[in-house]
Every structure is written in C-alpha cells, then in structure tokens.
Image (tube, rainbow, N blue to C red; front, top):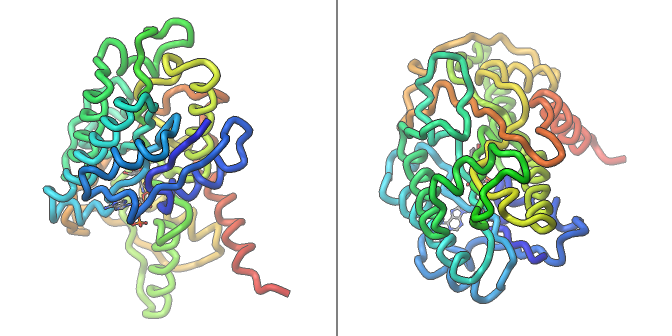
Length: 321
Ligand SMILES: NC(=O)c1ccc[n+]([C@@H]2O[C@H](COP(=O)([O-])OP(=O)(O)OC[C@H]3O[C@@H](n4cnc5c(N)ncnc54)[C@H](OP(=O)(O)O)[C@@H]3O)[C@@H](O)[C@H]2O)c1
C-alpha cells in the first residue's frame, strides 16, 4: 500500500511517517508538506494525488493556531475547511481513500451532564477553528457522497453489520495532542514553570477546561491500524467517524501538574477559571471525546502515555558520555 501523509512535518505527521515507515503492510510512505502541498493553493491537492497516486491519503495538514483562526476566520475556513474538501475531491476522483483529521472543537463544550461527546452527537462549534474543521468534514463527506445512513453510524457498528456502501473515507477526531516537534502543552508548562520560579511567582493553571490529552505516537499507531484493517477487509469496516484519544480525561491544571510531577519540577500553583485568561478563541470547556471502538483495542490512559513521553524526553536531555 502507498500511503501519503499530508502535513508530514507536523506533530501527528511526524509520528505517522515514523510509524508507517516500518510497517509491513506499507510499500511506500509519501511525505507531503509545504511547499509542494499548500493549503492556500486550490490546485495543490489535485496535483499531488494525480502525481503520486497513493492508495490512501492521511490528511493531517491544518492551520492549528486556534487563536490565529479566531483572528482570521476566512483564512481558517480556506485552510481547514475548503482545502480539506479539495483533498477529498482529488482522492474521490482518483480512487484514493482518505483519512481526514478533525477535532474535539467541532463541539461547543457546553454540555454539563458529564458525558463525553460521542461520534453520534451533533457537532456545534463555538469558534472559527472548530467551524472550519467541521466544514472540512462536511466537504470531505460531500466529495465521497457519504450520507448519514451509510457513514456517520459506521464507526459505531460491529464488523459484519456495517452498510456495505460505506465510502473509503474515515474522519478521525482527536484532542489535545502532545509529542514532538514544536512547543506542545507539556513544553509550554515546563517553560512557564521555569519563568515562575525565576520570578518567584505562583504558576496559574486553568482548572475548568477539560479534554483528553493524546500522545501523537499513540494516535499515529491507531491510524496505522485503521489503514491496515482497511487494506485487509475493506473500507466498509473502517469508514465513518472515529473518536481517537488516549483514555481518561483531565483539566488543563491536572494535566499541567502531572507534567510537573513527572519532570520533578516543584513550583507553587494556583487554579483559575479560563475566563480569567482572555484569548481570541473560545475553546470548549468540556472538550471530552468518547473513544470509538478501535481494531486492537482502545488507546492506553493518557497518564501512561505522558509518562512514557516524559521518560523519552528526559533520556534525550541527559548529557552524552
Ligand atoms: N494539536 C492538537 O492538539 C489537535 C487537536 C485536535 C485535532 N488536531 C488535528 O490533528 C491534525 C494534526 O495536528 P498537529 O498537531 O499535528 O498539527 P501541526 O503540528 O500544527 O502540523 C500541521 C501540519 O500542517 C502543515 N501546514 C500548516 N499550514 C499549512 C499550509 N498553509 N499549507 C500546507 N501545509 C500546512 C504544517 O506544515 P509546517 O510545519 O511547514 O507549518 C504541519 O506539517 C490537524 O488536522 C489538527 O486540526 C490537532
């Protein structure tokens, strides 16, 4: 199987390229990124799919600066909505399957009953990033002619009982990714703790925003399992909407404290509501996703994944002998 990864240099893209490169069901990994793949160029997806003819495209390219998206909703829609639709059209026309990455921010997070958002819940984004990502989902479904009957419920149905008409499209919603490269939330918290200690200040942490911290390496492995299963059993087994996150959930403050604990950093902290931290975007307060069943089982708990990530980071920072 020839697998193309769009957004190959990003957090998830890096993990996907690394994970897929050694997989026995993959003949070739095509790493697409700027300048060849440009979300601002309407013809870019069609050119790449036509040139490389992959069997499947994993569309992980996106403008993930949520505050930037709030400041420029038009550009957010171009990059995260329209461009995802163009990739889907290119795939559908060339007989290429697509896995489109989406987000927990398609939900407004105003739910107060404590239940996580399921793949069957109706999305209702509260910010420009979420609205654009939802538009990307919808445009991808239109390109593949994926109707509610043959698509949305597919991820929730047992193998063998799914509609045989499911098109070769999977939408994978995830949340709160951590991993390399770039400054992820753990890196930002450690840097903020360092500044607080240097300035003898308390570190303020947001305690009323909840989500599912998710290790990019684990998400990439789950996506690889979907690709492998689709290759073996067909897209009617894996097409549809998937919620793929590490197990459990946490507030930003709980996540931050776990980062500090694992790094052995001791600094006084104080909980505060998100409303005390004005920012252009409005993140969902309750952004918790209910994981959908995955081949090979669900992802491990986020604390176990974070502990592994912290161990890897620490070993790389040890001075070489
Ligand atoms: N990060 C999260 O917490 C999170 C949460 C939920 C869902 N998601 C979704 O998961 C997917 C992967 O996210 P991620 O965290 O891996 O994102 P990321 O680290 O920001 O990587 C995004 C990728 O898209 C590329 N890109 C950005 N602007 C582009 C443009 N104008 N044209 C072409 N490529 C462009 C980036 O290229 P450069 O590196 O060259 O800029 C990078 O390779 C995205 O669909 C995102 O919406 C992410």
